[in-house]
Length: 152
View (cartoon, one colour):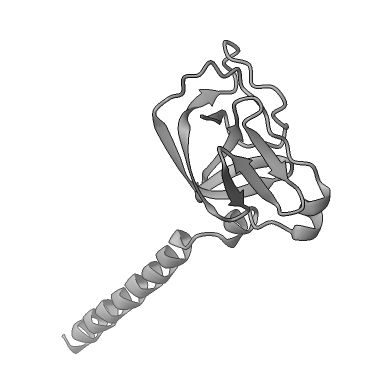
């Protein structure tokens, strides 16, 4: 009987160790990976020498009523809005309404200046890149995702 009790106590104590180990492992798995965030921190030496694409879309004066908010970043020549891990959206603009200030590393759109890393809040809507009914020209291949945000 004594052996049975000591085995029960060991088993109960071992259960706490298993729970603690699972808790630590779960915490590590849920922590945001540094690679997903650091991929969008601009390297100013590389960024300043590369051109930025401002892809136009055939603007007809109407825009969707959606809102895209997040931080403005660059991915190669592509301007993107980063809303968190896994939430990266490429941008396209009405022709002639947006430009890139390469010296100041900022997007100029609708009389506003958006520096890299600053918060943006853009009206518009998503467009699937595979949908050929609306042609977005000049979108670099390194732009992420299946959709592009048509800012308006």
